[in-house]
Amino acid sequence: MRAVMIGIDPHEGSHTAVAISAAEEPLGGLRVRAGAAQAGTLVAWAAAWPQRTWAVEGAGGLGRLLAQQLVAAGERVLDVPPKLAARVRLLQAGDTNKNDPNDALSVAVAALRSKARRQVAAEDHAAVLKVWAKRHRDLARARNQVACRLHAVLCDLLAGGVSKEITAAHAARILEQVTLSGPVAAARRELAGQFLEDLRGLDAQLRDTKKKLAAAVRASGTSLTEVFGFGPASTGTVIGDVTDVTRFPSRDHFASYNGTAPVEVSSGNRKIYRLSLRGNRRINHALHMAAITQIRHAHSDGRAYYDRKIAEGKTHKEALRCLKRRISDAVFARLQADARQATATAAAKGPGGQPGNDSDSSAAGSHPERRLFGQATPGPATTIRPATTAGPAPDSAQSSPQVPGCALRRRFEEIPDNHLTPTAKRTRSARLRRPATDGKVQLPTARSGA
Image 1 (cartoon, helix red, strand yellow):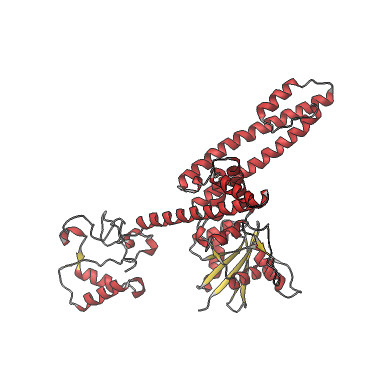
Image 2 (cartoon, rainbow, N blue to C red):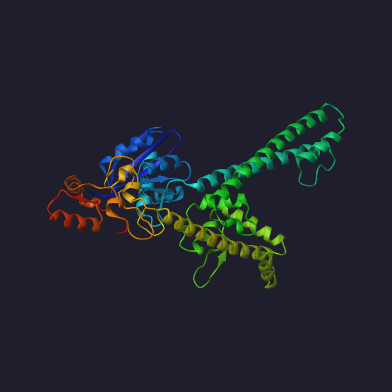
């Protein structure tokens, strides 16, 4: 049984999949129409390769839905950046045609050979923050466009126009004072009135989106808002794009991802570093706005750091870049602390048998398809583990449900070895060596981590 990598080139109307072996030998291909059955069709086609891994190009963009459907189906999915797949196509033979099967093959090869592969996980609360942060950015851009168009019309109605940032209330007062001198001015005033209505509508939508985004940030329980200059919009943008901070080994990697680390362009004995225009520009913009906010407030630590850099002889832009990198490190530390807190909380609510967990066993509390023993006793009982109580241990007859020894013996013999922990295997071996009796025998519990 050999491992197989399946590359997928996603599109709006169809998806093309190509399977290759570890030696990059094509094993088969399939083109499916985008629809409700797309993931099921692909999984059924790939059933011949149990040890399979899916590689979706742009699993955070056009291929997001398909990647999430495959993850929900229990498949292992990798995210391949489109640029990485394009580089693989570039390194192939020059006579390779540009089509969907060849693109899917390049995606599979890129996922097979790349060391920086990112596994796709099921979407969580970070996706909610990303949705509302994107909506906020889109509305802000649309409002800026409408405001610019309103400025342009007011320049034709008033000498000099409006020199400052315009608001809906200010524009309404200006339009009330405009004196119409003919049909052209009347048409322009009517157009300005329509822009004013658009501006009011966008302002209302922005207020509503800010409330939803602030509520989502509070629900996430993040400490990123404690960084000076980070509001709900910036926090939602950073968490929504980072998703999992553990994929960054260090703060330097995080700084390179968000574009606050300089790019080395050295050659020979010359060591040269230049401004990075790479990285995630949305996170970079959030860090930039936080740096500007700190500089504007004289009491902030960022302003004191900025002043020290200026005193060292750096220019405004150089000091601003230093401050952005400092804020990037602070953001990374906050994200790491939040991740540790989330891990500790999940461990406290995890399967039973661990300190701080409830008394439900991992077998009885897991997904029905992953239960090791099934339901031990009929009736409302939901656990086969003795209830943990403070003080003296209760009697065995009251601590857990009991089943006849012969029935338990048959059930225990039918359990496959790969479904038992080493402790459960030793217990079964010891008990099966003893003759069956009519007494009551308690079913051993499979504890995770035993």
